[in-house]
Length: 453
Ligand SMILES: *Cc1c(COP(=O)(O)O)cnc(C)c1O
Image (cartoon, rainbow, N blue to C red; front, side):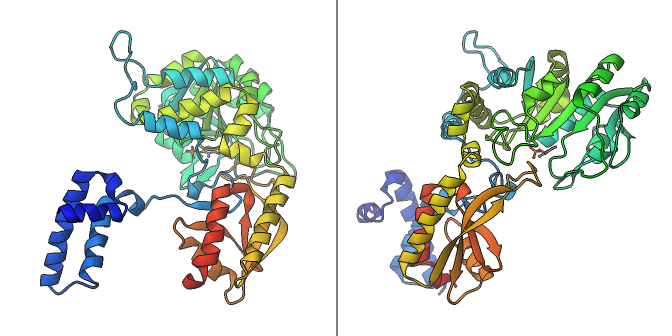
C-alpha cells in the first residue's frame, strides 16, 4: 500500500489526501482482482487499476452538468445556463456553502430573515420600497397572482398572453394560481377604455402586464401607456403587476437593449410590483425578483408559496454579490458583470479579436481555414428578440469536413464548444468567448479536431 500511495503522487492524485487515496486503492485492487477472475478485464492490469482509482477519486470532472464554451454569440443562452456569474458571485456562493449566516441573527442568536440582505439591496438598486427574491421569474407571477388574486379575477391584455417556452403560458399560470383571467382588447390593439371597463367589476383584484420579451407586435397596434394604466388601477384600488422578464438595471443604451424597459422606470411610471429574472440582464444566478410597494411585497412574503419557492443559501449569497456590484453604480456593473461586459464590447474590439483568432487558426497550418465575417447576434433569453447585435465572427472551415461535422466534433471536446452552424462553415462568435476559451479552442483545433472527424 505504501508503494501505491507513493504512486498516487506520481499520478497527480495526492491532492485528494492520503486517506481518500488509500480507500480508492483498496477498492480498485478489489475491482481489478474480481474483473480478472471473471475474465472481464479489457486492458492491462496496471491501466485498469489506475483508471478505477481515478474514477473513484475524481468525482467532479465526471459530472454530467459540467462547463461548456459558449461560442454562439447569444449572451444569455438559456440552454447553456444563461448569465455567467461574476467572480464575486462565485466566491460568495462557495463561502456560503458550509455553515453560514443564512437565516440567523448573529447578535441575538435567534432566527433571522433569509433574504434580508438581498431584499434590502433590491430596494436600493431599483428605487423600490421593498424587494423579495424567489426561485425564478416564472415563480414570481404564480406567487403574485396567488397572493393577490386567488379566487378572484386578473385582467390581462390579449396581446400579452405570452408563452415563454418550456410550456410556461400566462393563461395557464393564472389558472394554476387559482384566479380567473379576464382578457381585454384584441390581439393587436388594446385601449384605456378596455381596462377601465374591466376594472368596474368588483371581483377584479389585479391587473397583470407582461413584457413582450420574446416577440414584437408591429403594424396596426396600440397599447396603453404604463402611466395611464397605473392611474386607472390606482383609481380602482387594484394593484398593477408588471412581469418585466429581463429587467434592465443598467445598460439600457447598449446596442440591442433599446427596447428593454428599465425596472426603475417601470416603478416610476406607477407599477405597484415589478418582477424580473436574476439570470437575464441582471447578470447573476437564477432567481425571480419582485420589487415594489412594501405592503404588497409583505403580502407576497407571507404567502405559503414563498416558502415553497425559496432560494438556496449559495444562490442568495451569489445574488447578494451581484446586486452589491450593481449598487456600486453602472460603470462597475458594466465592467464586473460578465453578461453586461459582453454586451458592451465595442465592434472595434470584436473585430480585432476575430482577426486575431482567424490569423492564429490560419497559422496552425492544419486543414482548417478561417476567415472573419461581419454578422448579427442576439442577446438571448427573450431579451430584444428582433434586435440584431452587430458582431464579427470567425467562420471555420475544414478541407475534409462539412459544417455539421465540424460542429459535432467541437461539441465532443472537453469542455464542449457550442458554435453556430452555417452553410459556409461554423461560426465562432468572440462576443461570448473568454480569452481562455480562445486558447482552449486553438489547442483543440491543433491537437484533437482531426481525430474526432
Ligand atoms: C424570461 C421570462 C419569464 C421567465 O423567467 P425565468 O426566470 O426564466 O423563470 C417570465 N416572464 C417573462 C416576460 C420573461 O421574459
